[in-house]
Length: 223
Image (cartoon, rainbow, N blue to C red):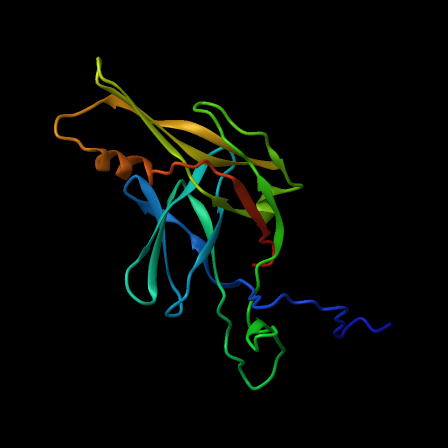
């Protein structure tokens, strides 16, 4: 058998399927109390970002995705991460050659000029109580894996007698052979005169009434 060539067996594509293709990659840089990564995306694109913590043992999380104009975006994170940005767009063929595969709507979902995401698994996590952590989600080597967190909870409490504020948010921690979520206290101090709850959102992130219900993981070894 030849050591090169192309073989496709029983290719099945569900109606309307489009692959997520890599359009940007890079490390986040310090931006105030957060870190940030700037990138461009085609007009009308809806970026999907997977992240890999730069260091093991440090809590990370997506914070907010800000659209500056039609093509320029800034993604903010808790902690230092490598960001992998995907969209359902595809590159135009260069040089008049390559491979394109279409779904049954006549739309390109694979183009050999693009680099598609390589899913590994999606894991249901469930609720994590303040100051606790979830079970570890095991991988042979987490340096090869990036995550997307579905939902991100922030909890804020105040003792009206002492006027002490406490705030927790869910962070994702990378170990050498696993990922886990911890609900970590990031805010604990006396409330200041004139502060509003919007001030606390800027410190902790977006409020959500739901807990992270799942995490998706991709292989980033060749990205």
